[in-house]
Length: 103
Image 1 (cartoon, rainbow, N blue to C red):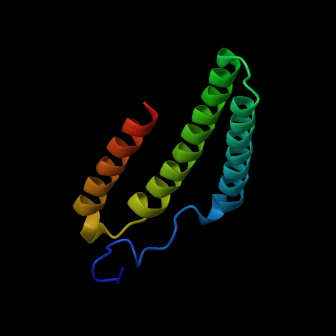
Image 2: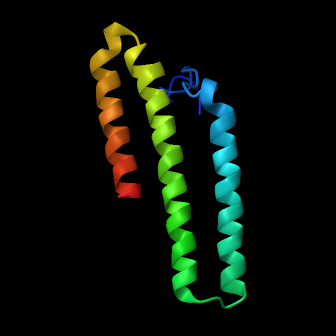
Image 3: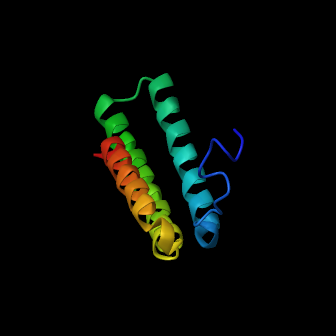
């Protein structure tokens, strides 16, 4: 997408300071998902698989909350005061979207 059609294209990532933590969490989640795939392939007990899926969901939620926190600190608090209403509307939409996926 060009910068004219994507309003977030010119914005820097607000999670730069936590990028290493986020990448480590994502790698851990990737390993957990592979573990669940292996469990299914090996016909492991359903409740054990559900326990592992619960860990994946909790890890994804924690990672998302870290990114959301960084967004609030970097893009909302330190954002352009002239764009405050648009920034808040975007934040509310992001929180609603994230809440639906992890709730």
